[in-house]
Image (cartoon, rainbow, N blue to C red; front, side, top):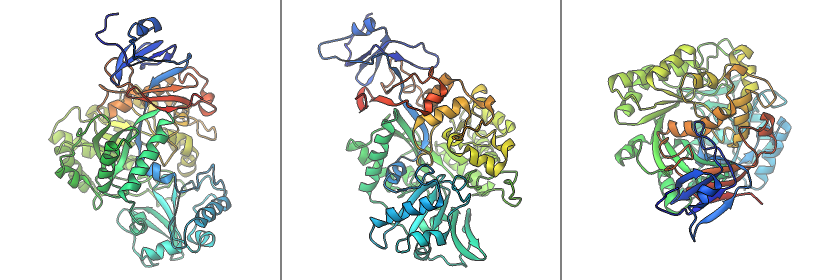
Length: 542
């Protein structure tokens, strides 16, 4: 085959899945970080020059690098240094308290103890820990224990005191402070968490860069080469932008990152970004400004997602509505008119209705048929809402790892009938809504295999099947993790498939993700090799 250049790198003897619409190939040639050509071993080796490197894939399965559509990269890296209280590490309340004691032992008295990952439904007690229980385990440190979803935390007495909270402290707008018989019990939901987090020392820029680097390398170990940081500014405000730019300049940004700017009232960094010319699309393929995020509700497992029907056995609880309709519509219209893509958090059908309506009004006033506003999570959309999303070009951006990690919790708080249709990705795919997927790490692990398993089986971690009609075929699931992830960022022309001209972001796995038995997705498959722009950035071939 005729070609004006020789390849820098050639992958041969592989089982290369180039994309759902493309046929598989045996070999692939890379030049200057991008796919030069694909074909047979002989065809690609014809592009070999004196300096060309050749890697034998030994028949292994390769795909485009995975794209996590929604996670928190800085937090992922920083939480890796916190106390691990996920159900695997702390299945009981006693184990959780033991983990806190162990974590506090290495911290000077008075220093903060941070922990994340519990799910009250999976604890042996079936409830949240209490302030008094945290006090008993760690009396000499301020403690903030955060539920897996990130929308609920429990504080001990010292943390509440440092925040200046008393039994008479009023609930902030969009937040809930828990009380038992009129006394603070440590429970903080949604915006109430900010009362305590405001007195925790803000990480330095160096610490933020460390989180970016540590989290990004963790993603590469799973074959994830691109991600969206879903709320830049939530940890340290505009300093996070500086940290990202310095990480990139210093070679410490391991993965392609699409920055979604926090736009919530009172904590927004959008004005600072706007003044700096940082609008959607600014940057390059390694670090680009993406959308603006507004939180409209909480989490289903934490019973704070805004539903139009009350939670099971909680007739007065419809979740938390963060902002009034008029304010949401004004904010969305303003950001839309400035050219920003929107990527707003809405899980319950009440919140989804609010944001779809705001998007529709903004698009009607300032038309842009290819803006691709997103509904982050989009857990409980109705058929009528989904039809409106298709009409307006609005994209669902779910994290299907939620089915694996939290599906049984959804059944517990919503009942089986309502819970089973959670995150109806099969419906969205059939409607042509191009649903992507991700982990919301550190809410869930960025490990893609439970995510893929949930998409193709609709099974929770305990084996509960949640509406099998919403399952995807395995090549559809991989398309959600690659091509549709790129589409959600308006980047489908440069990544998401392995075709000439696109970035050579490639993941090589120990088994065929499309053909292997579904149960193998949870048992034993590993990412053996990850390439970013044709460079090896993770190698576990042994």
